[in-house]
Length: 222
Ligand SMILES: NC(=O)c1ccc[n+]([C@@H]2O[C@H](COP(=O)([O-])OP(=O)(O)OC[C@H]3O[C@@H](n4cnc5c(N)ncnc54)[C@H](OP(=O)(O)O)[C@@H]3O)[C@@H](O)[C@H]2O)c1
Image (tube, rainbow, N blue to C red; front, side):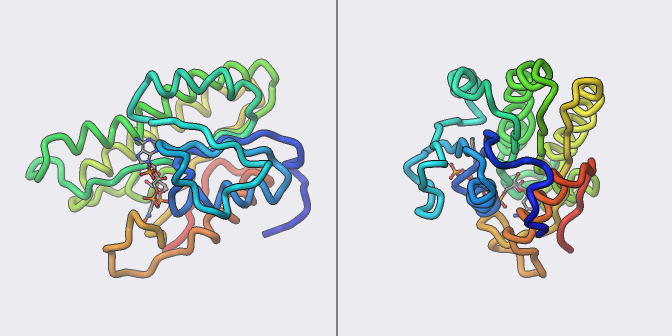
């Protein structure tokens, strides 16, 4: 990772959802080391790992499946200029011959409707300041459907289209929208997958570089 602060992370305020998770906790730590104040959002903030506890890291409770919980967080988040929509769930279920009738709806709530609600609430503040960046953590499965994770693929495809829509609508507001499309990552979500995986620290470093360099999309990992 290039350590020069060419973007100006120092002094900015960031929000990372899913801060208890494999990638989320790395992003919280990395952004705080770069000088950001970081809102670390989790369903259960008490579960934030020890290395995500510092004066620059502010725990905040957000359940992305609960619109009221998102709405309640917004007054605290008005000055956020880096929003990382990272939280996600993968029920490892298919679309037609599924094990659980509820998987598809749950995945859409957390992977699509939650980030949509958060973006609708925060984008106006960023647009008014003409400054900010959204980073949406998507997946290679946003683009390539995998039957074993079929309903997850659908929800990530919806989030990919959301990302394109956000980018188009914010184009004239100086608010950037970066889509991140990782392959398998070495986190609890893919612990059961016996395949090559990229380290979440490497993905976090690529995201920081993308924020610095101005690209729209990155594809970390195999
Ligand atoms: N791992 C992979 O192979 C892979 C590949 C491509 C893309 N991704 C994407 O990368 C992102 C990060 O995932 P990860 O690999 O770091 O997985 P992870 O370790 O399982 O972390 C997922 C995070 O999402 C949070 N979360 C789940 N349901 C939530 C809800 N209703 N409201 C708020 N937060 C919720 C979890 O919090 P709790 O502690 O409350 O459960 C956890 O912090 C996800 O968007 C995922 O889809 C992962």
